[in-house]
Amino acid sequence: MRTAQNNKDCSITLRSQQHRRKPRVLFTQRQVNELEERFKKQRYVTASEREELANTLGLSATQVKIWFQNRRYKCKRLAQDRTLQLSQLPFNPLFASAMPFGFSCLSKE
Image 1 (spheres, rainbow, N blue to C red):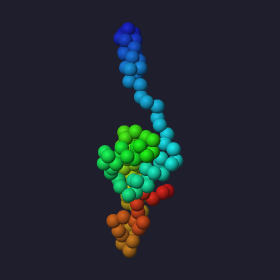
Image 2: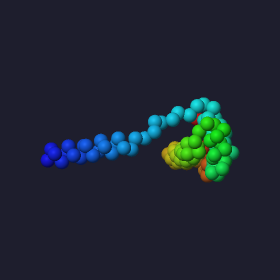
Image 3: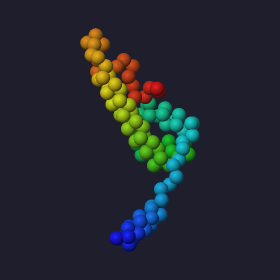
Image 4: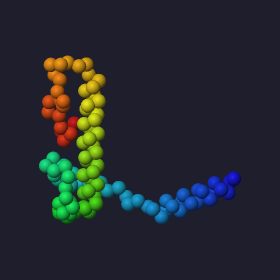
């Protein structure tokens, strides 16, 4: 039994050595600001727009693509969190609306 476990540990180690991930890249404040500004105007960018934005910011097109995917998910998650918070408040028909006044997933908290 010990031998089987040792073989399993060995194969996991080999696999992890073969598939090393790139280190996490931290975006500069300038890059984040530019990406956020673009996201406010346009939640989806075409491949050519992505390339252009990547070149301007000194990033790869893949990094820009993933940033936009992550930002859209963050926006969706924030909207769901706010909806959940609102559903837990006592209902008052005078203030009933589909979304709270000034709601935007783009607003800073």
